[in-house]
Image (cartoon, rainbow, N blue to C red; front, side):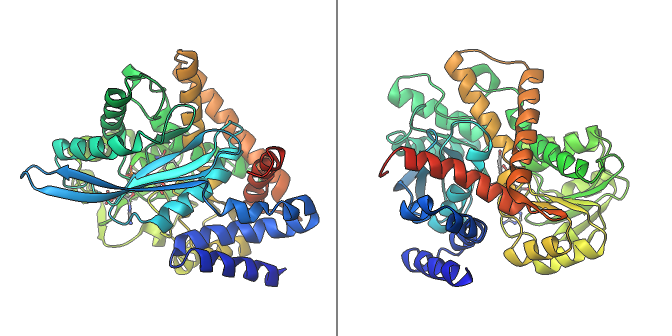
Length: 445
Ligand code: NDP
């Protein structure tokens, strides 16, 4: 088996040189599904896996815009339309200086499996740009977003490809992009999700990824007769996903002791309360400041240029970015008594880190399962847009909760091993079966 996997990975490396994050994401899936494919020759014959690693379409474009000094700036825009086997392409837009094609291909590839797990009809995509919204004025962000959408609007639409937010793309950016799409195409449609409530957005969408991740961890804990009540949690990041992870954890009686950004982390040993969380929301979503500013206000410790994983906790919620927990971080977490990891971010744990968690038999699920609540609620936003109706907060939250329970059940179904649930295998195989069967049904596509 390992020879077959290595042969396949050689092919991936040859065809996609230098795209290390993409190789990492593919390897994780291949290691899970190759034994399953061996037992089901129809997938081999149809070369399903070989097709899945090739995007259906890759769009790369120039994004010129004028800064506040009147100077021309040029960024690069991307959209990777990975798979439309089970629905229109769907996935976020990342705006961050680190963005390159390898990172977006890893994210688009993961998105295909994640979207399949949600039980909703959505294909997989990802897009973005190396534009950095940090330190830019609202006017500059608007100019960039308008230029980005002027090109992107040729390729997307409510039945074709429906982008959403991701790192660096929040409500403000979605608003500017939606406005530009509407001007050019002269149509008011659900072409983006994460929209404002007054113009087609869904209640609970901002909260969905964080809430969903907590719901998923709750299900994992239930398998061991445990719950979140009284648990000490370490959360990384302080953006959209982290903020609502903390909100739900507080509601369910857990104690959150850390939050971070790319400069460092804060440690509040008494736990971040609702009032403090509101300060974080103001700071990050309106003032757009740095997390260390909270340390002064909360009278807690701040650790410059460090990640929060050496803090003793029961549950870790990595909610910032890829590869933010390495092997040593994972060992430290396990040594300190961590019993579960809920990935809010995409691929936040390195493969070596994942092995540490699995060897220690702690509850560990990959982000493609535990953070799928965001895109699931985007799917619910698309449904509401098609119906031209808005569901209540309670209705959307109930559906989100049900979807997270359903994703957990699929992981258990395909990932059950003697005495342990391998959520990585469970998520990969469950997602694979749905997409692969749809591809076979549709012929040579
Ligand atoms: P935001 O831009 O709202 O927040 C990102 C947070 O992570 C910020 O605190 C940011 O700090 C920090 N961060 C970003 N890059 C790095 C880095 N290289 N090193 C350390 N910290 C970093 O993004 P989201 O909260 O939306 O996304 C967070 C993660 O969750 C991503 O992996 C994303 O793909 C994933 N995700 C998001 C979903 C959503 O609905 N938004 C859905 C599913 C997954 P700083 O401000 O200093 O950059």
